[in-house]
Every structure is written in C-alpha cells, then in structure tokens.
Image (cartoon, rainbow, N blue to C red; front, side):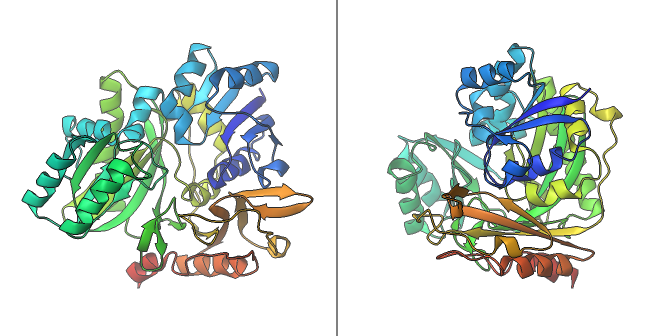
Length: 426
C-alpha cells in the first residue's frame, strides 16, 4: 500500500522530516502544511492552520490522506491527535494528556515524582503568588536558581538568575512581561550542575526504541552566553552519551516514562524527547518534549538507514517492537543561521544569497519565503546547514564550510557548535 501523508509544520524540523519521508517507497504523495520553500521540492505545500482541527480534517478527507504527522508541539498540546483519532484517522504524535509532559512543566515534574524518575527538586507557585515565590527563593538562598514558565514558551520560558536581585527581576518578567501568558503557573527548580544532552525515543504506547542522541546549543552567544533561543545548532551523537550512560537513561528514565504513562491511562505514542542534565550523580531530566527537537531533528533523521515512514506507520499501528530500526555511524553537525537581533526583535524580508553554492551536506530551510522570485528571510531562525563526517571534527568543518557560502543582511551564527563534544573527545 502507498500512503498519502500530511505533515504539519513549517520549520527546519519539518523540512528534515519531509526529507526523510520523501525517500520512502511507501509514499504516494506528501503534503506539508504550511511548509517552507525548502519543502516544496519534496511534496506539495498547502495553507492550513494546524490549530483549526475542522479545517485540517476537511483537507484530510478531500485528499484521501492516510496518515497525519504532527511536527510542532502546539497542536499536540491542543489535542489534535485526540481529534483525529476520534475520526478513526491515523496520526503520529501523542494525545493531549500525554503531550502534557511538554505542555505543563508542573504536570511533568509531578509525573516524575510519582514514578521516581530522577530530576531536580522543585516547588510550584501560581502567578499571583509572587511574594511567596520570592520569599521561597530568598529563604533558600541558593543561586543560580531555575525559574520555568509552566506552559509552552517556544523554548524561551526558562530563566536562570544568578543572585537575589536577578531572581526578583525574573519573577517580575514571568508575572508581567512577555512570558506572562505561559507562566500562569511557575516552577522553581534547584540548579543542576553538569552538561546537557538529549535522547530521542520513538514510542507506540507499549514499547519504545531509541533513535539517537544529540547536544543542542540554546544560548545565542558563543560559550553558551546570552539569551535562550529555540536552538542555535546541534550535533549527534554526543560523546557524553556513552553506551553505559544510555543504558541508565533507558532503565531509569525512558522505560519508567513509557510504562508510567501507560499505567496512568495515557499511553505515549510519538517522539519522546528527553532533555537531560548529566550530573555527578548520573542523568536527570531537565525537560520532556512531545516531538522532535529543532534543530536536533536535523541531525537525527539523516542518520536513519531505515524507512522513516515505515517506522512511523508501525508506531501508529502498535507494532514498533516488530520493526527494525537501523542507524548509521556518522557524526552530524547543524549550524543555524539567524536574523540579527534574534531572539528579540529582528527584521524580515532580507534577501538570502549563496544557497546555490552549497554543494555538500544538507540545507534545511526554517524561516524563509520566496517573493518575486527571490529567497528572503521570514523568521528568527532562517536556515540549517548539516555537515556529516566520519568524525565529529569533520562534520563540524563540513557544516561551517557551507555556512560561509551563504549571506544575508545581519546574518548571525555561532562559531562554536560542537566545541564541547570535541573537547570531550580530546
């Protein structure tokens, strides 16, 4: 059987997923909603609002879609998987209650506490309990301290003040500033010392299989300085995730998460992204995400030798345990080119030059558009350039060689993506 597939999303993650799905012999036609200029060559871009479930369903019926794959977190947290499954339509992505692992930091922390999954100690306050939260932080007197908006904030809802004054300012930002909508509830966590990494598992509700690990670079500045972003680059595999560590992550975190969700009546089907802090006491969960990371997806998907579409179908049919997943042994690095000013205010509509000069690796579009025949910037994170190699050093070099061929006004990228991995391998 050949499948008509609808992929929801528009960023670099969705371009990477479209790139993987388009290679499948099981694919009849791929629709990407809304997609971007990079996905146009892989399928058909269509204008759909993923949060308008009725509009999505009408399109599914009109185009005989067999399977819908949800890229971003927002429609999953809003319940699109529940809506489509009630229509007896196959959808790849967790249902609303399972997606709360990402949709609510409080839900996730309470879930981990119930199932003895290692994570940082925490307390939760409502937005109108500013005084209590401030009192709690001051009484503890432990800095840095981690403040997390409970809801979705596009990867920018975490503040890590270094002292009492900064903590009070951070609380005010969460109460009245740009993050206030996401921070109706506030999670205050102890700061975990260590190095971050992410492990990705694909799940069908009963079983799971690890499909890779990566290290993201969240901060805008080199040396992990400055504001948090959606992600400035990633590489895979991360040397810190040794075979021994991965065994612990599986036994202490992934398996209890999958079995815990099932035991609570919310079987988890889709991508489980486990953000980790590798501490002196072992791996602990920083956060869960209910979908592929972006830009981690861009270095994980190309490593799959198996048919990505077939693997996804096996999840929706509950037969993941019978499906073999083969990964290659190459290193990959992706560097994200962003608009000047990101993650704060930035201009759009800047002409992008040099894309036609990229002659190796993979170029994934994110915030781009075509207007009057020209490729223009259309977001904060604009392009992802993936280099690969037999070594991490080679993968990084190959990525930066291609990045330097591309230009647009006020283009910015970090020059140290993967440096921590190189240091660990030295």
